[in-house]
Image 1 (tube, rainbow, N blue to C red):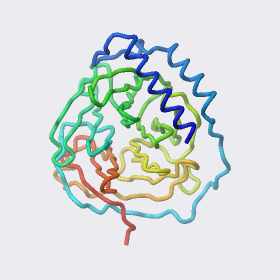
Image 2: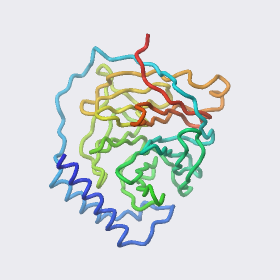
Image 3: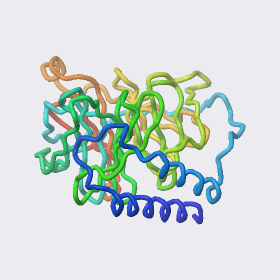
Image 4: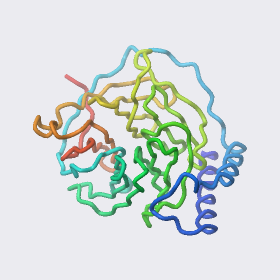
Length: 295
């Protein structure tokens, strides 16, 4: 708890310093605009106050993996032109990261009917990816640009960026650390005040590496992960990386809708209702659901 408080304070100081000492950020930010010195200073401060996670011995297989299905509570409209890359609830408000070059950005949408409330476009050179919320800020990954955009929720403007190596796919925040996927079988645990890697977690299903981990959603000490190009969502322990349950999310769209839609890719947990909203790339609908044991 002390480390979490320190990290939160440092992150707030970082953003206040950035906003107070620089020109207002435009909607299009280049990777060269990252303040590397400031990132380095925060990294050094975090390393002296936050414990670094270490690898723990964990079983390579689990015999009691659950098999769950999706229980649909309600079907709701969703923008079928949205190439959904990340889905996130915050205080009853719903945010969505959009992908594709020339069409990427972040939208705030009405969680009840999918209508657009606000839109922040990215430059044509960016391909938007995973999305999460840290305090009063949205964190949006980019696919191959190597930057994460930090967006103030109130102003809906990019106020800072952090850099990283490799591809960005999914992102979630558990209240202390960020978890990021890159399409491989591992997740990187990152410090939210600097985006520095703290630990790497291999994800295994009965001892077997899980490839193509994509969209992520943190709920307590559980990570829900969509597997790219499938209708499967995994329930993962965020310490060991072991898969605790597999969720079959197939059959949500009609056959006609599936013909023009792309893959499942959007998981948002609503803490108020304790339900999930799930959707996909170019889907005409989103679904409020719970995950139940299959009969």
